[in-house]
Every structure is written in structure tokens, then in C-alpha cells.
Amino acid sequence: MSGSANVGVHVDHNIQEDPEKLAEFQAKVDDGVLIEVDDWMPCAYRNGMLRMAEHHANSEIIGALPEGEWITRAPSLRRKLALTAKVQDEVGHGQMLYRVSQDLGKTRDDMLRDLITGKTKYHNVFNYPAPTWGDIAMIQWLIDGAAIMNQGTLADGAYGPYVRTMRRINMEEAFHYKSGEDMVLTLMSGTQKQKDMCQDAFDRWWYPSLMFFGPHDKPNCEQLPPMRWRMKTVSNDDLRTRFVNRFAPAALALGLKFHVVEKNEQGLVTSKRPDDKLRLNEDTGNWEYTEPDWEEFFRVIRGHGPCNAQRLALRRMSYEQGHWVRKAILEGSTLVPPAA
Amino acid sequence: MPLSKIRANAPEKSEDLDFKPTGDLVAFVTFTQRKEGTKYVIAGSIDAPDKTMAIIYAKEHYGQDQECVSLWLFPKKAIAGTHADHPTSNEEGPVRGFTIFSQKQSGDLHIEAGSVEACHSEEALAKAKTQLENAANLHSIWVVDAEYISSTEEGEMIWRNTDQTYRLARGYSKAVRTKWEAIRAAREVDEYQAEDLKESF
Image (cartoon, rainbow over all chains, first blue to last red; front, side, top):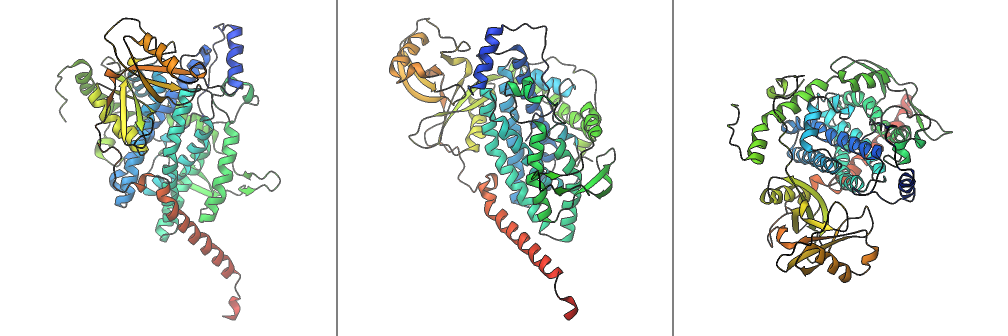
């Protein structure tokens, strides 16, 4: 359920690529020919694709944590089955994306270790809390909706193994999004208490979902490697506009209200006021809104979001507790499992 | 605000891990057959300690996201073919069956494309090239020693035949539509009644 909008590609200018090969590579990309793992590719492309796929894989398995917590508290058996299937899907996406990354030259074990020791990142959006069932509905509606929009364009990229994985992932995302829409509709056609819970969750998730697409693009983003090499095919700002155009009118139709919010350190809303900038601009056909707090965005990326420490602690605990199992499998060692 | 005690008490650590990496499991490639009599198509890869576990994982992972009746699986290392990451070998062995998989263009899915008999993978690839129509235009051809291919048993249930609509988008379409219709209709009535001739009531 993630995107890779936050990952940059750092071109190492010390690496001199063969200009002829580079031109040939660019021509292939421009012609829409997909690149396979054993094709020649610039060093920065290989590293960039590895970073992107690894970041995406990390996001899938961390993203499963807040939702997994709600499985035992789902309000009905059908919702419980659906949420279990969804969490299983997300971890499966992680598995497939780690495979794409492994083929680009990094072991899965190294990636899991780098994730829990903070050497690599995962998507910012998973550092926010999900205190009610309303949040689970909002995550599936807004965040999975955003992910489908993003991944739909990533499936149009140039790296064959990643593109194939995106196509497969998107089939499953459709279910996540639809079940999320159903949950939001159910809450918003329910009692006043259900509607309030849904509105509160919407207040918590609207801005993280706008920030989902990453910061504003650099003015020449189409000329820079990520887009020139079709690692991504649509800019962050264009994706964000498409998202708002789809979701703002839907939320209004549901009776949800748009608020500009302030949050505390735990990510809970402390004060809110109506977003008076929210309106459809008839001239451009696009919806206008109050910008997200970009300082918050960068603060969360640097590790100071409401749930960063908690997510990593949980992932690390399960990695450490699984050590004896991996050892037993790989080395035939019969370490005694740690006492429960 | 974690909901379980175990989650609430997960210790926050910043030091490096005190044990070494264990390395990776074996990579297996999975092919699924969607319907009886159709060709096997690549589904993706799975990492597992051995082929028995790999089949179990693959059934759960690739056998549940799309309807499928049968599944093939082999170690990635068993692939020999036209690309540099899958070199062929001319080390002679007994004459045996090799299964062929072909990929039309880069980015496409590999699909089952028959079989050949050969004493090494180089010979198998050469035979595959003569046997396949359009071989020259294919992006990639894999030959896999059939001995390494594991499969689910005939008639084995993979796709469960219980109600699985809860995990499919179409399982929600009708409910979503009905709820939208009710909400939008209710809003229209609300708006109409807001301007109602209240003073005459």
C-alpha cells in the first residue's frame, strides 16, 4: 500500500558511464522498451531502482503494523476476514518487492537489518497513529486510494521486474480500496457516534494523505533522472492534484468536513478550524485547499513523527525473536528458543 | 497508544544488532495455471528454505491472489537460458526432459512453451530455439531441467472454494453502490427540505 514518492536518486558524478551505452539506454527508455535485470543500466539507475524498491518493500511490511493491530478488534467477522487478508497482502507485497531488490544486489537479511537499525527508511505515512476503527477505514480509503493512483503510474515505468510487481500489487490494492470505501460509507450512513468517529479519523488522515505523494517537485523534475529514466512517470504535484480532485468531492458528498488541524506529539488533533480555502476552481478544473504543514513532513522523515520509534521497536522485536528460527532453518542449528 | 501489552512494551533500541546476518533463503520461481488445460504463466518468486516449504508458501501467496488450479516451482538457479544471468552449461549428463519458458518482449511474463529432451542445458536451448516459432524474435527463452520442477498434486485444492468475496474488489461493488445511492439521495432530500415552506407547517 505504499508509494515511493519520497525516494530521491543520487547521481554519483564520479562514475563515468560509457556515453554510447548511456545513449542507447536512454533511447530504449524513450521508446518504451522495458529494462530487465541483466540489461546494461547506468550505475545510478541500478542504485536508484534498488533504493526505490527497497523503500517500497520496507513500507509494505511497516504499513502492516498499525492495521494488524486492529484485526482482533474488527467489528464483524467479515471485516475481520477482510482485514486479515489485507494485512497478509501487504506483507506479500513486501516479499515480492524485496525479491526485486535482491535481484539488484542486496540480500533480504541486510535490508531487514538496515530497516530496523534506521539505516534505510520507509514511507512517512506509517508514522501516524490509528487510535480508532475509523482510522482503519480512512487508511484503506484514503491511503490505499492514494497508493493505487501512485502505483498505477509506477506500473507504467521502465524497469520490467518492478513494473510486473506493480501490476500484481495493484490487483490486490483494488480490494483494499473498495473495502475501505465500504467501511467509510458504512460509518457515514450510521449513527451520529459513527459519523463523529469517521470525521475525527478524516481530520487525522487528510493531511498525511496529501503528504503521501511527497514534497513539491523541483521545477525541472521532468529532466531529472527519476523521470527521464521513467523510474517514476508522473510528478508528485500532479498526482496530488488528481487525488484531491477525486477525493475532495467524494468526502463532501459523504458529509465529511475539511479542517486545518494542529496535532500534538502523539499525532492526535488538538485544535481544528474549517479549511476556508477548499473550493473547486472552475477555471482550472482543480480543487484548491490549504497546503499541508511541510515542516511536519520533514520532521517525521527525520524520525520525529508520532510513531517512528514504536514502529521500529516492534519490527526489531520480531526480527530479534525470529533469529533462532532463521538460524535453525539456514544452519540446521538447534538453538533453544528464548523464553517467552 | 498500542493496543496490546507486547506491542506497548517493545523496547526501543538504538544500538547495532548483536548477532550477524544469517543470509538469505533459496529463491524459487513460481508458475501458476489459472484453468485446467491452459499454459503455466510466471507468477513471481518466493524465498524458502527448501522446496517443500516453497510449495506451501507459494500456494498461500500466489495461489490465493488469483484463481488457480495448479502450480509449478523451481529454484531460480535451475534456470538456464538466453540471458547472462542464466548461463547454460555443456556438461554432459543423461538425456532428460527440459521444460521451456518464453518471454515475448522485455517486461512480459514468461509462459510455458513445451519441452525438449537433451543431455545438457546448452543442447536444450538450441533445440528449444528450433522448436519455437519466432524464436529469433523472443526476448528470452528459459530451459529448466524437469527434475528440479516441483508441482502441486493433481486435483490438489489451491484456490479455496469457500466464499472469498471479502478479499475481492467486486465483493464490495454492490454494497458500495447501494450505500452511495442512499447517501446521495438523502442529501438531495435534505437540501430540498431545507428550503421547504416551513412557515406554512
